[in-house]
Image 1 (cartoon, rainbow, N blue to C red):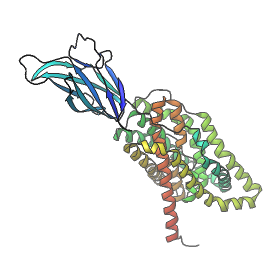
Image 2 (image 1 turned 135 degrees about the horizontal axis):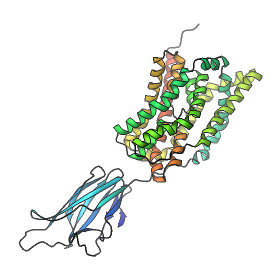
Image 3 (image 1 turned 90 degrees about the vertical axis):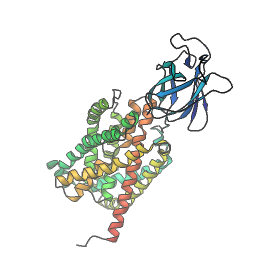
Image 4 (image 1 turned 180 degrees about the horizontal axis):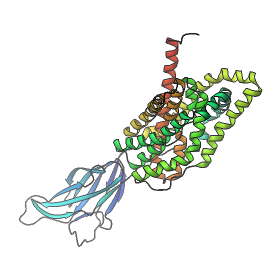
Length: 431
């Protein structure tokens, strides 16, 4: 088997006969007769050469004809068949591959209307394309991150200054918003991800990535969006911390169900170290902010003045960094994956808001629950995929968390800008 590239997105697969005999199939042959299965790249066009040692009979007229059918046309399609030129005995079969899979072939050699030979033992395995995905370590190498780190620390300290002790006591007495967030994040969203992958007929790798992304806890930006959209900051911080802890146990449970439905390999690896690191990264500066609020009230007031500008700047910086990291993914992502990524944050927002409204929660709590359900920790999902699956499958699956992260950040930015415009055009009545 020789592969000759004909363009950036296409391959020419040449399967040549180099001799040998075949007892069961004396006429038709693909390759040298030593292999019955051949590999072809995903979503490519190429040519397969089928050789024939049949020269026709004395009474027949015309040349023998070949018919080739793919028994899995969604994986491999036969576009046309033509005879070899220059007196060579054989046929050129133009093929086009779809998503990864195995396609058995049916070869029928005809002389006039007489069936000379039929073979169904050849098959083509369409191999998944390897999508280059930035390694997890590249996130820390992004120069934008070093500019944002001091702002991130100050921003989280300022959020600590926003935490209200009375609000925490209220959540301890009435934890319904926190429970709603956990139900939405770990029950409703994974179900939506599975149904969406089924409706869009996503390949297994992409379906795996989508379900794991939808099974992830709320992202660290949830309380930032709650601040900018009039949510309850104390509730948002509490929900983010608790859902991150719950992810260590609920993500494997979710995957035990949907992994079986998707016929996925067992052994989901939940990176407990990364979860603990996320908790520390959130809890340490926020705890510092609480101490500042108690011991240094003037500094706390200054941090609160800077909170919204810092938050908006971090939102823009995070969006720029996400697009920089996901540029390769966006170039290779297929339309169904992009469509799925666009709907996940929006559906999460609507679902969370509907659940909160159904329990009669006040407006700020409704917005906070909606944001926590609609914003996933895509970096955690990416880590789970890279640690749990083989490289080519992990690379394909990683399209989902990147697209969801980019879509979610973009959609939340649109909501924030829309809210600012609304408040400017229709300011709330004064006291």
